Image 1 (cartoon, rainbow, N blue to C red):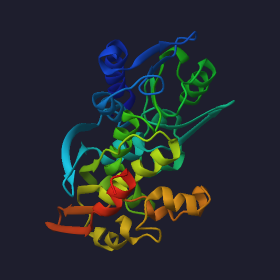
Image 2 (cartoon, rainbow, N blue to C red):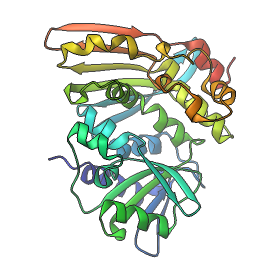
Image 3 (cartoon, one colour):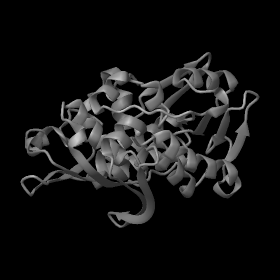
Image 4 (cartoon, rainbow, N blue to C red):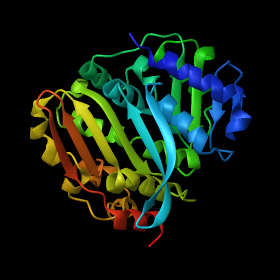
Length: 315
């Protein structure tokens, strides 16, 4: 069986060994755990964001950065593809691990989750778990983890702490903007999973989303990076599942109650309480389905350039 941690470890080793070329900073902690700072105290960059996202996907995705336009405004885009959507997106990339140790907090994603089985239900649904003696985790945080945090991660993954590796970047960074936009395919797969669809039937996924400009404020950065997919993420999924037609109406973001405003505005109106937000908003703007057994194609949703540009600060 494929090991997402083994595949991601190769990418991590490249980042760690050639950190200077990625505007990243490598750290080896007293307990042997290794951490690569991709944006906390350094700038990172687009190439670093690509590698970070590829690690997030457990080495089962290809990530590229290109230039595009939104209503004649030049904007960089990230394009992501995978031939293992359920494992790459739900089994690795999903931010399903809240790392909370003493005063340290981070959203954890990446292949280490497939060792710790966080959350366990996800792995039961996709029928996957990893077995490897190294754990590789991606942490979305403004701070680097210390030895105690890495020890906690190692224990949860049942590996030696010296075999525990982390890449870290805040949302308000170049890498943060790239890796959140790089979740565009994951957002579609996650939404279908939440609707009860068997995501193991998805054989391939590809998508792109604009890379949000970096904001100084973390909450505003969270808003515009999410808007990149909510209002301008375009996804194509290939699958063997004629029943997909029963899920189409609920798939794109424009079917949610909060649709039409930048996410930061919605969050502010909810007094910055996530539990007050309609979770169906966390969906891609548009999705194309190629259903193989019947040879059909479906297209739902649409991009919303005006809200995207407003969120990014252009209008």
